[in-house]
Length: 475
Ligand code: NI
Figure 1 (cartoon, rainbow, N blue to C red):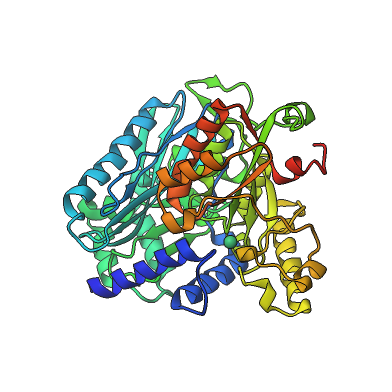
Figure 2: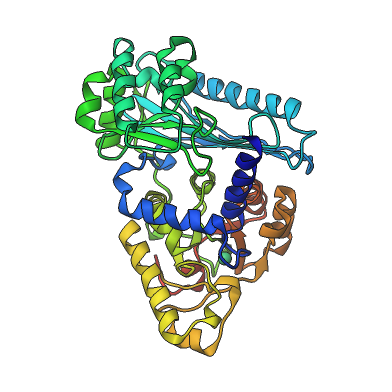
C-alpha cells in the first residue's frame, strides 16, 4: 500500500511545486490539477472557507525551517497578540511533528516535512486554523490536515470536534456515514468502526470546518480507512443538518464564517479596528524621493500565498502577484484577499503556456479568460501581463490587452529552493526601481520573504506594486 501512496504524493507535490515555470507536457499531476480546478470552479460552495489574516491586529507568522538539504523541513505557527495560549499550543503541536519527522524520516529517501496553515475564522471571540502537512519519506507518507480552535470566551484551545456538542457525536457519525454512502474509494466499514470507537475517534475526526454558506465539512486523511491517495475524503453536512449538532463554540464559529464581524475580540478587549494594510495615496511611497522596489510573485495562488500575505502585512509591504488563471479559478478567495490587502494582481496567462507557441487568437483568448477569472474573484482588472517564461513575440505584443512586464532581478527561487539563497539573490540584486521575480508556490521562497523585507527595509527600501513603480497610477 505504501509505494503507490508515496508515488502519487510525490507527483502531487511535484505538480504543485513546478506547475509554474517548469512543467511541460501532460502528466497525471496536471490531470489531477485540471480536475481539481474544474471541481473547484463548479463546486466552489463545498470549499472550506478561509479568512484573510490581515484581520488580526499585530499578527506575526513564525516560520522556522531546517538548513540540512538532505532532510528539509518547514513549519509555521501564528503569533496572535492576546491569544498566547493558542500560539503556545500550535507551537507545541508543530514542534512535536518536527521532532517526530527528524527522528523517523531523515534516513529515508527524499524526506521532506512541510507544515503550513490557513485561518478558517478570526473574528468575534473565535479563531480557527487549518493545518496542512506533507510528510514524505517516513512512516507518515502523505498529506494530512487538521483543525484547531481558540475560544476567547474561555481562553482555551480546542480540538476539531469541539464544534460539535459531545452528546451529538453519535448523531454526527451517523450523518457522516449517510453523507459518505454515495462516495467511493475508501473502506466504509473500517471508517465506520473507527468513528464508532470513542478512543480512536479524535484521530479520525480531526478536520472540521464550514463552507462560506455554513455547511459543515469533515475531511478524512488519505491514511484513514483506505481513502484513495489522489485526494482526501470529504463529507459535507448541509447547514440545517449540522446546526442542531453544534456546540456553543460551533454555533459562534458558524456565525462568524457566514457573516464575519471582521474584528477580533480577545479577552473582551476589542481590537481598535481590523488591521488594514496601508491605504490611501498619502501612505504610498513617492518613488522619486525614496528608494523603491517591486516584489513580484508568479504562478500562484498556491498553498503558501496566505502566509506570504501575513508576512507582507507585517512589514506594510505591497507586492504584485502574477497569477495563473486556472489557479485563480481554484482559489478565488485567496485572490480576493490578496487584492483586499492592497496588492496588485497581474495576468500570468491561463495555464502557463509559452504564449509564443500559440496563435494570435489563442493568445488573445488565453489572456482575456485570465483577466475574466481575476475580475470574477477579486473585482479588479489587471494592469499588466507577465508572459510565462518571459517569452515574448510580435504576436504576443500585438494581442496583449495590457503592457507586458518582465523583471530586472531573477532570484531563481524555483531552481534553488533554498530560502537563504533566495534572500541573497533578492538583497544583492535590489536597486532603486528594481522588479524582483519570485514564485510564491515554493515554501522556501515564502520562508525567505521576512528576511528580504527586514534587510531591504533596513537599507531604506520601500515596497510598492509594479504599477506604482511604473508611476502610471498615482494611487
Ligand atoms: Ni511563471
